Image (cartoon, rainbow, N blue to C red; front, side):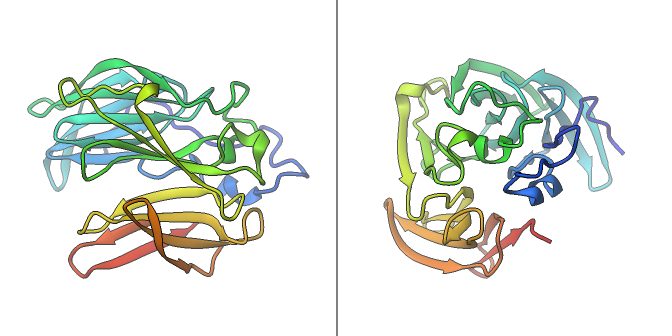
Length: 266
């Protein structure tokens, strides 16, 4: 095994889920996110939520990897990480929430920070032991086909707005010169039908259409079922229920043009 030399994290309370916790199933999902590790060529990148950093590894073969470094994530409780053509972005869930960029050097799998962390404004009182941490945090960071950054926001403004608040898909336009972005480069698409849908995970098909899984898209939180949506040029063109609550992952397979989802409920 290869050790990250960082600390993992878990969304839980020292006394267990409180009696009024709306989503006790959250405690089955330590990070309540998608994409905590990613492979970039011969490099593997992994977030360490408990120590607020990122470990990097070089992949030697199918059975051998070794750690090359560890770098601060630029925020608290990193949840999700993504890479495209040597540009890396990490999503931090703690505090207000932040995203931060890095350049990846391919030959040694080292990360170099770029720009400044970009705040998500998700509520300053949020901590990993807060029962509202699940709806308060963003869930996934990833690149669009155009090379910009997308982040799924479960509930805008933080967990205090759960379950009736609106989520969003936040796109941050990347500067092609240096790979940085800022809060001023945000284009936000609000997910308001129904309230409490909880947009969680996303992917793109081979035509560049956006695929989004909502944890409670059919009926809204906390009792609704999951729903998979297809967006073309920002317009919803198709939706289908998953038949399960807490739907939290979606992936398009270009080999067979099928889309797969999963959930963490039972």
